[in-house]
Length: 222
Image (cartoon, rainbow, N blue to C red; front, side, top):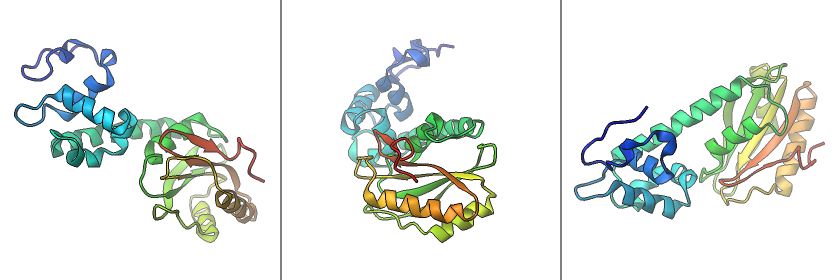
């Protein structure tokens, strides 16, 4: 389906289907024309350059109005709405899958949702006995230096959701997804605690904006 020409708004864009558009053209549609005299394509290219591509723009959408001249609150709201729709689609697809360690779908959703966050979040993906997703929640939040993780609280939440298995994930705001010794130690403590109630820890994913590392794939779990 092609969109008819809309006067005054990047007229060439409206002659193409969405799949034919570049990142800059799609972003220009979301951000809108900007203030009087503003050029949507110029604004979009500037934002993509500043934040290193569309992933960076999504991750830093709240900062665009301050950092990129010509981006207003309405454009930021449209951008955040588009990102949220994508995340909800990814989550819906994830809930329909059988999730195992190293799951590509789990990596994709968790990285998209949390990989670019400026503060560390510890996330639990609760799974039933068929390894379908029961719920996903941020259990702990921290400063830029880390998030405190309490095994007793993790066990309590797993039992609350009647989970048979769980996948953990946390982001590194530094942008480096390599697991630390503390990450490995916490994972093994959580495994030991959950073993006492017969709940399996399938994986622990370390997330960054551009990368994801699986502790299970690295064979760093007991």
